[in-house]
Amino acid sequence: MADLNELSEKLNAIKAEIKGELDRLENSKSVFEYKKAVFDSKTGKVGSLMREMGKIPNEMKAEYGKRVNEIKTWAQGLFDEMDERFKKEEMRIRYESEKLDVTMPPVRSRQGYLHPNTLVKNQIVDIFGSMGFEIFEGTEIETDYYNFTALNTPDDHPARDMQDTFYLSDKFLLRTQTSAGQIHVMEEKKPPIKIISPGKVFRSDDDATHSPMFSQMEGLVVDKGITLCDLKGMLDVFVQKIFGEDTRTRLRPSYFPFTEPSVEVDVSCFQCHGKGCKLCKGTGWIEVLGAGVVNRKVLEGCGIDSDVYSGFAFGIGIERIAMLKYGINNIKLLFESDLRVLDQIRE
Ligand code: PHE
Image 1 (cartoon, rainbow, N blue to C red):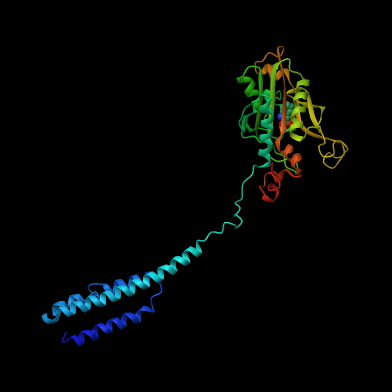
Image 2: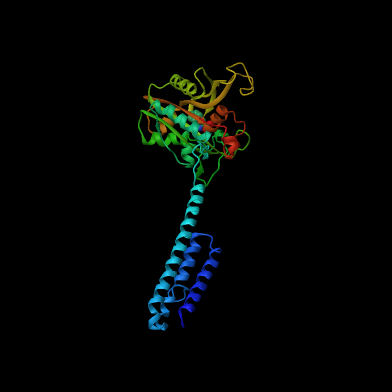
């Protein structure tokens, strides 16, 4: 460096170059990066000036150092000021974007609801639970013995044709009725017995009101002195809780091999209250379940003395109750999980 004029020129050129670059900087990050480059002790326009001290004649060193410090302070001040300005603006933008309007309506999250089959099942469990019934859960795969033979339906019995059965082998099948559970309970437990047993059952049957898989709720009471009247009294309470206070029951003679006598239970139409409508097909009555007094043969087969004990049993079709209660005309709608249907059913 020959003289101070030359030094001044050089520093002025550096200043001019830095000033010229400033327009290019558009945020605090680019200020930071440019500053880092300018102050780099090896390659930076300002940062490397001190390295040249060695080449400066001794008498100029003091002045050189002073001027280099000046330009450093100048550049530092310039960058600080820009940094502050950008940061302020950046903060403003960030606050703006994070602003929360507490008066906005909330984003609704869709909530799940219980399926109508589950609703009905839970209601039935609650009703019988409050009457002191215990729950027995059977298995979906059963033996021919529990599903038929022990229920007084031996191999050649015509009643086997009432239920088209899915056989898995000679011995095993998919249970066609939760009644199979009656036998397990009576084998395991001595009277008094008071159970309900919900579960899936399977039959080769398929139309608007029948599905190859559906759900039943079995009921079984065995004790001393149980009669058909007890069954009727208990069913009256049940239907009033499910369909409404003024619902009445009517028993019609029927046939099941494992009950004697057997009945088909109708309820007074809860839609027209007996006047006759589409739901009850003009009769004022709707069939809801099968029931009866437990056949002595079945009790004896399970080692229960039928001279001392008697009982009643009933089987409720859960989908059938759900269809009646919620006005569903095709059982398939209960298995298709179509939200347009399910969304209409809430309890
Ligand atoms: N298991 C019979 C059916 O599925 C219903 C029933 C149960 C009838 C208990 C009488 C007693 O059709």
